[in-house]
Length: 351
Image (cartoon, rainbow, N blue to C red; front, side, top):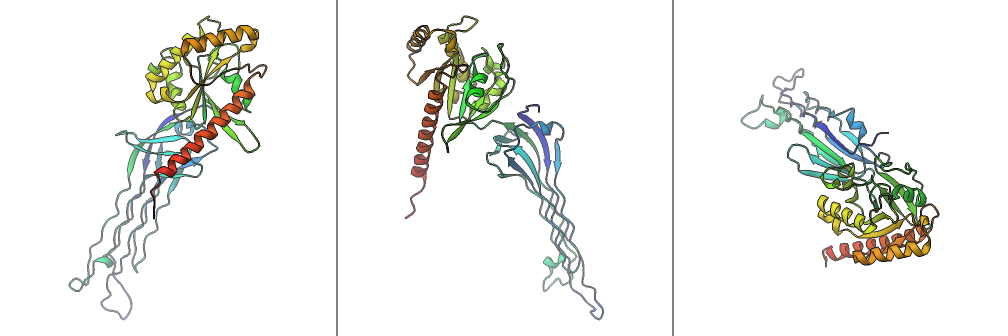
């Protein structure tokens, strides 16, 4: 299935049904009073989170959605039927924006979550509402109101705990295929990953986290070079970034230079990405002997003045991958506990 992470659609809620201007007509009742019922409300439009979807590709084929109109009211105080609501399924992580004024309308983050994007018009009032002691035969009624009409911009940002970051051929796809059941394309040339891949990593019997592998970045990605500008946004919702760097790159760029260049791309795209927790992971250590690999990593860490955790791994031999996974699992548990504590502190004290 083709991966599509942005789409624009046109949404129209249903129009409310008109009220009725009807009068009671029965045998032996000469002057029946007003009995016009109200019109039914128009149907509303909701977006519904669906964990089974991972792309917005369906909206490339259908871009216009319209809810059902309400039915007009009738005599004998019969109210018109309400128009049916429609529910449009979207993948989790979808950001919804008004396409005209670029106002954020909400995020769809949970399976089954409903986000109202266009409210149906109210049904009109029948003439039964306008009778009074001075106007016993009102012919007044009100028409149904139009439903909301809106152009929506949908943008999907993958929901993952961990984001893998690195230049092309840094070993991201190999790592995610090693520690999870995900099977991205792996080859010995750059840009084998053309869209984000998600994998679930098991840490224990009842513990796991989601890891995201995005296409490799190149210098100038934040300005649109390569595929990076399309997929850097998918790292914005992660809790922790793993910065993968090839310990012995084919282009002979020193690892510390690669780290600095990618750091700058993060900041250029979104300053908050530069502030996100980031660990350094040296990959492909199996191509060097242990002493040489440790010598390079020690030099790089010192040159970068790196204070965050760092690891040496080989996804091919699985050396160091278990230690990395366990460390990530512990860090995520600590982050979640801290978030819960902060939520408790912000909760108002009711006493």
